[in-house]
Image (cartoon, rainbow, N blue to C red):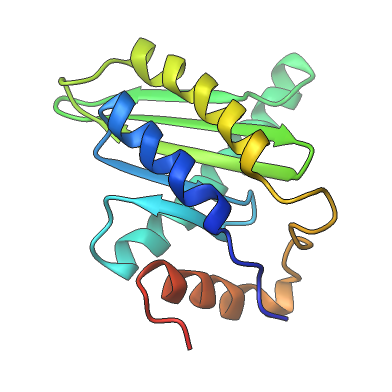
Length: 157
């Protein structure tokens, strides 16, 4: 099964990147399947970002359940020159993760504000529930991830 095209997410993500001033952004299913991306030049970097976002989300969700009874929804890390923001969202068309990387030209407050608008735009642009595709099965995970990366870089077969 080929994962559904996620062209509906490209324009809202592009607007988010421009308005929030982020340098890299990934929208992915919590399994790591790519929905949309901005700023990545190499497929290996994008693949790594998807997998790491999914792993960080799974870990923080479980830690949140253990500590507070519910998953942690937004993670922020401030490095010396770059910051990351990872947030999980559940919408009618399904769950997704946003991983955004930004530097001193932006701020966490601006990224969060723009994320709220991104959520509204994704809700409007998304296909009807049931048409967004089922989460990938583990036996198809690698093939579906590679297919979505190929589409993201214009290498669709």
